[in-house]
Image 1 (cartoon, rainbow, N blue to C red):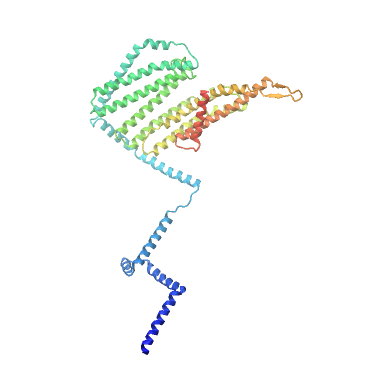
Image 2: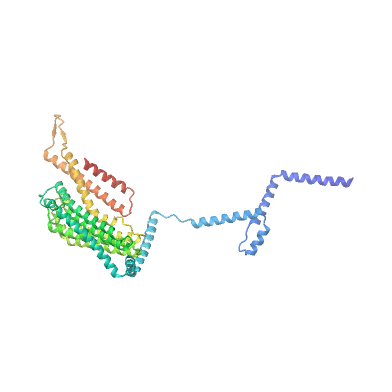
Length: 487
């Protein structure tokens, strides 16, 4: 009995102790911490373990410990990746320097590659010509050239026949009297129309006959004939346009104020430039069609582009004194300051012009070398046309100003009031005219400056140098000019 009572007392004491432990939060917290520490110790992965040690350790861990270990490892790897991917912030000037360094390194690499590929050009052109002639040799190539020239001769004969049938009409055009202003322009256009029709006949006649008589299987001959035809047509079209503008044979329909000698000189030089450009572009396209390498085609473009630059440089240097004398003979309103500026510009215009064309050459070579493929965007040609475009827009803007704004400025008559009598009186007529002329000079300067800025922004835009407000400014200037012209 006493033994049973003692057993019951021990069981009750144990129940009371367990209940007290469950109700004490501090003890439970301590127990949880101890359990967490044990778990953390169990999850911790020692360093420099071998594959066998890792297998033994993983065998002793339960599922919860393995899961904790995997999460800890993934978090550590993520922190390392984010730390490795974090790059220091670079300022605006630093980014510009980094961009310049990277582009310079790429440019040097591309130039080196272009130079290394120079000895391989003859072999590459030989392979292209072999593909053109189906590897039948120089005899086959000579025969193909002869066939193409025969068809072009047929087209030339058809054009001459057209001229014989229209000889009376062209004689009337040649005997038209001298004209001025807009009538001279329309007279030049009327003279240009028969030439354009004759060129169209020259183009269509051999084209139609060739594709009606030559087999489709002879792809090499077709390709060579198209290259010859496009080259001749392009050169002759440029010659007709130059005759329309310069009229080297007679001055009564000449659209620019040049002497006969200067007009003929510019006609010959510009026609030479157009011929080099046409031959070079068609040759580059032909080589591309025949599978020539990019290096070979780049050297072709670089060769004819440099030749054009040298021709323009020679023209500028040869006529530097004549242009200087012409600029110094002009009359400039606005006082001695303007005369001094004009004289300084007249003395150094050729230096500025040479610097500009060699800048265009440098930009063209850079774009050519950095390009992964050749694409004709017209940037090189537009860069040479930008000066005559600027002069045309400048004249157009001043003409619009003189036609619309100038009459209003000149008719403004400020009034002065005599306080004693209350009568209004006009200022003297000479002072009014002088003041109106001063206003007009200021407006003309502002207009010319705006046109110059718009053309400069356009120049930067065509070479890929985007200005945030460039496109909007250029569009606004052209809209204003069109509005004034319509007014």
